[in-house]
Amino acid sequence: MAAFDVMTGGGVLDAALRARERLAGSGLAQALAGRDPRPWGRRADERARLGWLDLPKTSRMLVDRLAVPAAEARRDGLDHVALIAVGPEGLAARAVAEAGGAAGDALTVLDGGDPAALERTLRRLDRTLVVLASKAGVSIEGDAHRRILVQAFRELGLGDAEIAARFLVITDHGSPLHGFADGCGYRVGLTDPGLPGHFGALSAYGLVPAMLAGADVTALLDQAAAALSALGPGTDGPGLLLGAVLGGCARPGPGVPGRDKVVLLGPDGLVGWLAQLVATGTGGRGRGILPLEPAGRPDPDRAPDVHTVALGGAAGHDADTSVWGPPGAQFLVWEYATAVAAWLLDVDPFDEGAVWARRAEEDAAAMLRRPAEPPAGDPDFVDGGVEVRGGPASGGWFGRPGLRGALDALLDDVPPAGYLAVVGHLPGQGPVRRLAAALARRSGRPVACGTGPGHLHGTGSFHMDGPRTGAFLVLTGEAAGDRVVPGRPYTLGGLRTARALADVRALRRQGLPVLWLHLRDPAADAARLVAVITGGDHRAWRRTTGERGAYT
Image 1 (cartoon, rainbow, N blue to C red):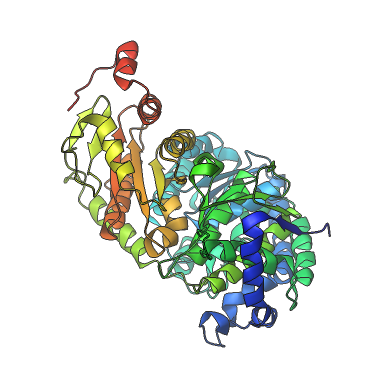
Image 2 (cartoon, rainbow, N blue to C red):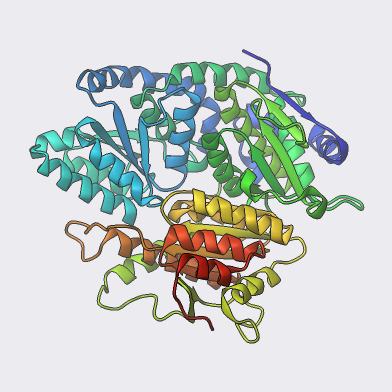
């Protein structure tokens, strides 16, 4: 295997060396080698929580069993996989498909984050195999997408047995989804309920959709297996070093602020999966590590609490830490490093409690059961095409007229060592990333960003259970066209609105400042928001585009 290396320097190196001294006598590396979860406060009979360390070997049987169905699908012309999954399962499959060399359009993830993804799938329905992945039951988004696809298959002329043959379900043994899939006649692949979902990239959740999409997952498992031998029980392996870098930096030292925000420079798929791994694995007990996309990277001189990590040869000449290694090894080493960093932070990395996430989904479902009652109510005010809903904690809108005042109020609620987060229920990631970049430039603070319910589902442990120093901008928008969900009293657009409002309520229950903006014209209004954030004259922008609207 090509070498796996971690290189760092400066203050990051000093923090990492202090952490390694603490690790040297801890026995943590030996516990990991022996699959012993007790260093994190778990019982010795919970060894399944460390089963991700064995996946480079045990998943080979899965790949062997899948070889024939995958070949048959390609023979039948099914060269496109639509993956219905929200959160870790979808992120894992996207990252593995990218790392394994699958064609960029061979896998489409339907997670409710991009309305256009479903339309692209429907245009290729005759070539599509559907994978429904969830550790538990079917999410609201999963149910909606499955119903729409089943109806579309029927309109294509397929009978019930032919439709069932187009579906493959991946879930935990004994989960509610297991029984549902059996009742529908779907093929089912079962996984270990003890395996934490955010550590599951090399399990069926990551491998099956990627392999069906044409990824070379065998090569990835070979690379991970070679890395496993390098981790070992010693204290000089790359996983221990990377964990010391991450965990050591996140804790403040003498005269040195903690660097608990990490900008990840690398392939989109890997960065997305790492974000949920690190946020979920370290977020808890009022601490954690917040992963950021490059778009949310502020000026380093204004944000000494930010740590920049370049992955797998990504351009990172100004990175604090660089990590090199084959893509398959990246999955395993980062999982190992996250477990180490969590131990340094005194956090259980395998906890998937997320009571707030279940409550948020239940909240959205309750709204959807009452379609005659508009859940959002009237906006506080409308500025041009932007509906402003709900003020931050710093005093509402008094003396802060218009959209600019609303955004200024949100920025005022960011603590000196805090951060911003942009959650977009909008078509595509482009507007969200542009807004994150504008906010980072304006505020000098790091900005996390993501789309749809999957973003908070994947990173919410840090936001909700970590230091709680974030301020949130939640965006919704009116997408072109809408689709009725068969057998349900709502549309996909109504579902997106309910999910966004549930996110807003969940954040506010934690006492976090939230500004919710609804964009009547998402593309134009997002561009206008960027102009307002960066100091442009948005009233002049309105005049040049001919937009009409009310200003408060």
